[in-house]
Image 1 (cartoon, rainbow, N blue to C red):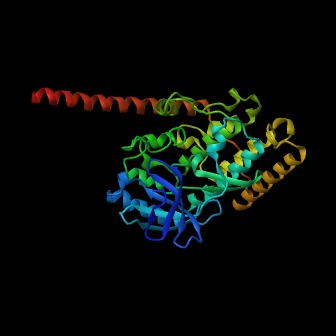
Image 2 (tube, rainbow, N blue to C red):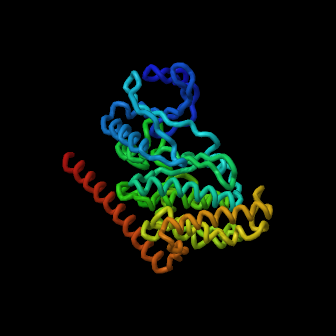
Image 3 (cartoon, rainbow, N blue to C red):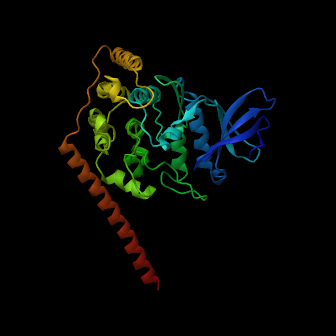
Length: 365
């Protein structure tokens, strides 16, 4: 589609990315004076009225969000062939996917700064009733000062478009999987309609684990094995592969809890817990690998965290921010039993359907 002109006023200049729901292009307006990003819906869904309607609804909802950490959506329209598209600001910097793909740990001070900026943007959306539900490294762009990063979140609202297209886990005709195994929360694999703000916070937890440790919290041979591990395993301990990150164990035990009720209830609480948990890692240069490790940088990092903590306290009316509540073994056992019961019920339902189909074929024969 590069070179094509949409709605008579946008010329596609290069492909920026492609996923199960569509593709994103860099585009210029008719006179070439302005550049934006333009997202087009996958042609597979072009003639589906439910998908098209939801695509426009969610583009309009995303356009109502106004936060420096959330991409601005400008316009939604139809191309000449009826394909829906919307335009948005073209983000500078790079995506977290590029960093995570390197599988090297980022300096804790940088991770904390990125995490706080991401949670600030999410908190803004959640307070307005908007849940992302497909937050992943490809949807997080950042640049600027490592300790004061410019973070921009993309693709708010497109998860609801995925619902209309068949839901998380469905494969498109081109073989692309809707949703991102490893980042979507376990509850979305059952009934995506139950997802709330805590589902987004789970996704943030996965990304923070990868950035702190340089490791995948749910290593697996393929996406389906990964989904099985996420449904049945306990939250991973980050200290198992990175002993120096032991102060973060309680944080991740809660951030990656398989059941929503065991997680942080809000972006604000998760931010405060991140600052509190990472404190020991910011106490000295020896605990921080990478380029951001000098005493002056560490002092700056502690100042940033203290400022963020002060802001959080002010926002809660002067109340002290919450500490990291440790998830008890009893909670984990209950969660494990619920997951096992859900899996058994799903298998039983599948066997019932299969048996019914066999009996029907036998009766017809």
